Length: 448
Image (cartoon, rainbow, N blue to C red; front, side):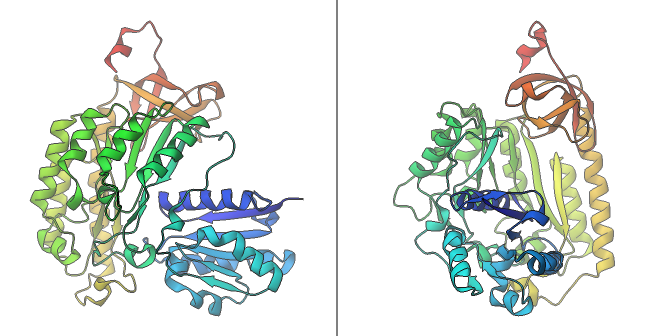
């Protein structure tokens, strides 16, 4: 009888992909996924240390699974960035925790579980893999019940921004070979995948350190030629490394979707320098203008931090000014929170929590207004939508995304999943769009 595994995933798309890779690995070891933790023989908490209070969330989650260990003998493990950061401290603090798996140790998961089964030992594996084995994909062996998939092209970051924990928990930048990536995308296309999202902490620096000389834009060009793939996305980009060659790709590659996530973090040059971001407000705005000039329909999203140590009212005002100038389609906004091991953790000029919350509320209200306005401006337009699945809002609806990555809900059934269809936007909301299918006889479909 197959054993059952339950994975609880926190954080970014990279973590979602890591969880998917763990499930595929475990599938070769007689495990099947369960969505009910109470049935699990193995529980893995896949963690992220980028967001606020990550360690607290992990210990809270572990507390929920103590009874499973006592009642069923369930193996309990922690994976991901917090596992990498905390290591043996997790085992010391949580006596019923069996395994800690760092960011480079995912391929070792089957062997680690075998060690636990044979010897009963508790295992912590957080060493860094210099050979890049951790980047190799576990390919699906059968058709997938989804229309889009993530593909890791590189991991790690060499920038060491003063607030960021990524280089400490994911390591330095390391890229996969282009041929390996292309073969994975072809494999996914053969199994029904229509859209791929290329992942990396800094995809713009793809290729650095490889013997082959393939830039990120060249890699995109190769993937654009793969039969069966209809859409290409990528995340995340660092503004410092955004090249003109990549900007031009938005006009040259038909399958590359008109959307870029380009974190700016602050609109203040003084704060950007303290953050060690490597660009200025002006240089960021220049790159945005180039993107808009090359691709007028491009959707822009970003990350921003308020309340970074030393941030004063004028610094915050500069951030709001940048937002108004760019008119982002959406923003992921956060209050600064300290990360152990980063340089910013040593900064003394902390901003009061009350001030951080006030600034975050102001910023989010402004962005809410901008997002709603931009979504309402789409009303009446016909957009190409890739239908992804049933909508969470209604059993009579399906949901999908435009090429600009906006969520669209529309009336429909399971037969539409996986299809690219013309949709007229009838209503724009704060977080999504409402659409209706355009008939083949409607001349407006030729405006796509």
